[in-house]
Image 1 (cartoon, one colour):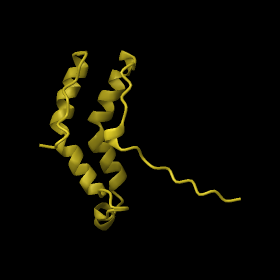
Image 2: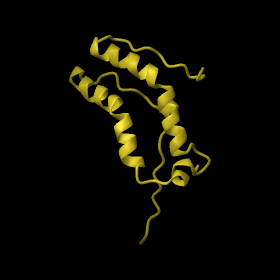
Image 3: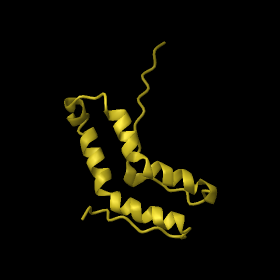
Image 4: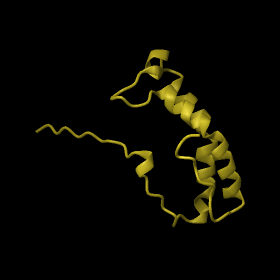
Length: 98
């Protein structure tokens, strides 16, 4: 019996954050944010421009997603500083993308 399992990603705006994460995880979070450029390059190096530019199911292309991350870099850098300072509240994002 063949099953058709389609896994769909949760919308980022629907994400529920776990604020009970142990402080010991802060370095993991900082590393993931800091390494995004290297991880994008690793996963995209072998892809053609057409593959990077193609939209699937009316969703953003890989290039559009990477561009969005670049747009958010200033926010990420501010949050890394806040993580390192062990601040209890992080700067909010501008959901209007202004």
